[in-house]
Image 1 (tube, one colour):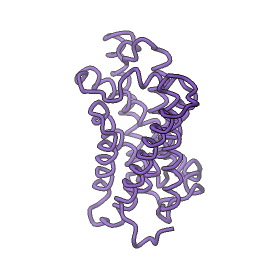
Image 2: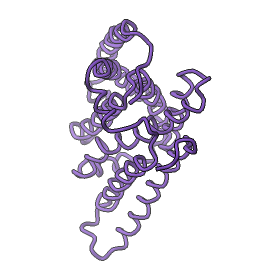
Image 3: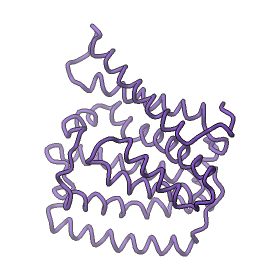
Length: 268
């Protein structure tokens, strides 16, 4: 393991891109093999995405900050940390819904480099579903909250708690390299970063991230012809009612967060 004094936040970004490049290489190999299972792109891209995220997790634990352990993460589901994890999860649900509604209604023309058809192809592959809904969120939270935010905060402790959260959120949104995902990824990154700082555990951001991605997968399954949130909610009326409910829900959740106190818990 690297010596803690030598670790830098950019190492975790580098590890992320190393895993992505490995996925690109694996995709090229699978495309040229004589034993291709099917002509569908999901049989080349999906195994590569799965391998990339598994590699990212392995690389993180090879170069992780000493404070990050699986035991510490699991402890985030127990006691006071567990209470805060649940509260952050309940706070994130309406916020995620509102952000997605706002982007779809007011910024529908942002270019999507992934493509709806590619996303659906991945979602309807069991390994692809597992990767996007569970493995991907775990890998990204380890690298961007457990790695970038933790190390940036350690080396810039004089800048307070918000700067490391905002920095990790910015990096998190940019590495997606997809204009359609940038606004949501940045706001989600802020929520995930605050959840990590406030609870002192990666359990909260991992649970929130898994829910966010799983909801996108569920939407793809329930609305195979149109994965629009507005359509899923029954049009403008249903969307408006949902937005109002989410605003009220978010208000109540934030009141509870304020009652619990804004001081952070010990990392683990």
